[in-house]
Length: 114
Length: 110
Image (cartoon, rainbow over all chains, first blue to last red; front, side, top):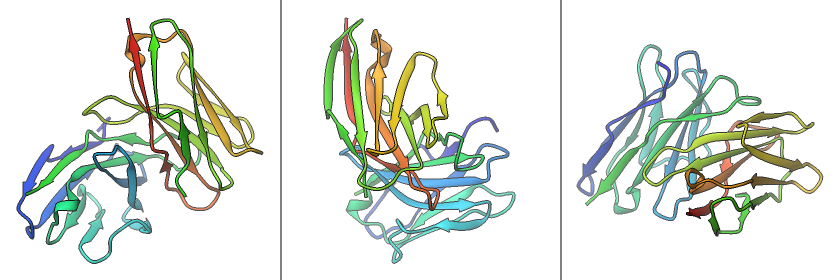
């Protein structure tokens, strides 16, 4: 596709429930990035992939967050046992290469943990 | 380390100019500028690369001082559509993630 597609647009979960977010990168883009944006507008880097391989996971809270990018499937970000502080907009972005090209962002998934 | 943006907010009248600055304590390989409107995805504006190459929007200009590890985004003859939050994203030589600054809110009034 010509745009990064994120689903769902909104997700509400009770504390302790699981949340799973999906991202279909632009066709032909090798790199996928996940960011968390909280109310103060700051973007927190979570994880990046080169094709199906984890490239950089320095931002991932290891205990409850996991992510995958499998061939022929949308990438996913899963949060086990959600907490109130996980409430945020989660953005996925993709790019062809990393050095000279822009990253295109999806519309985001707003996760609300109640 | 997160780059520092200044100012945090700016209010302009249509037609006025503004400059948004982004500085980093780390050596930079590239600086990426995005604009985000409320409730929407960030939209790419400009890339500035070490060595002087630039790629971006026709009506937005920017500079990159590699020595000072700073970049500036110039909003010239601002239009109402320029309103939004501007983010700089920086990338070091190693790795591929963009680290974003805290954003600069721009409001252009008629």
